[in-house]
Image (cartoon, rainbow, N blue to C red; front, side):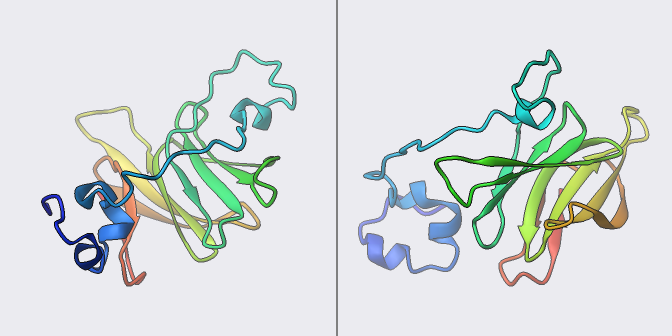
Amino acid sequence: MIAQAENKEQICTIEGVTDTCRNTCRYCESMNFNRISTFPICSQIEANCDTNIETVAEIVVASDDGMTLIYSDSQQKNVGFVDVTDAHSPKALGVTMLTGEPTSVAVLGDYAFATINTSEDFVNPSGKLVAINIKTKNIEKTWELGGQPDSVAISPDQKYTHRN
């Protein structure tokens, strides 16, 4: 870890610092969060959220162009999509159903990569990594994983996905 920076400009030029650990150099200390809208993910189930079905957006990432939010919903075993082209008025784009509970999601280009816990057996855990086409919401490829995946990340050079 980098201690509090004496020279913020110098520390923040280190590759990856401002992308991953802004608080280590207090880069964002003066920034404020300004909520401009909310999106009830229950509207993906029923337009007016007139439902008792439990749902939760756990991990949220943005598409490369920033116009679509993609979230994991382990409760409903899906990955959801939200159009934020008009950030003040987000719109439901639907969900992709999965074969288990998604534990994480990351974006690379036209694809959302989701790790899925496919087993409730703690002795013999299993999981998958799926590539979902963001535009079509279709699963394009699936990889079986050993163990129970917890997260997925894209390498800084964007050549690899990494899952824990």
